[in-house]
Length: 73
Image (tube, rainbow, N blue to C red; front, top):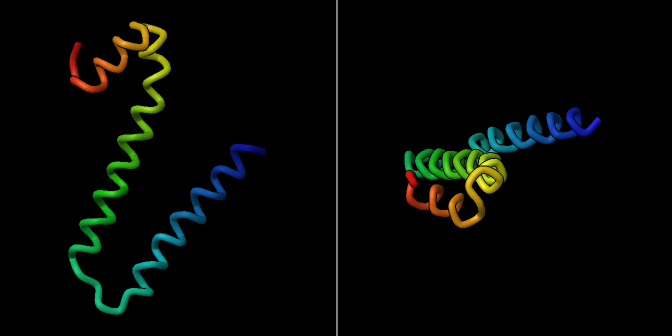
């Protein structure tokens, strides 16, 4: 049931995001650039949050933070 609810929320979020485009009368390229940058940041953050617990168990809390902040150990 939780998976179905999360899928529904993802679909509704996508629909609301696409409706914003139709509400803006004077669409500029900077709006598109902002929305793409925001969505890219959210995707990267979700990826890091998913990987952080595995990193903490593998190398410890300080090591995982070092790897995520520096890129390499």
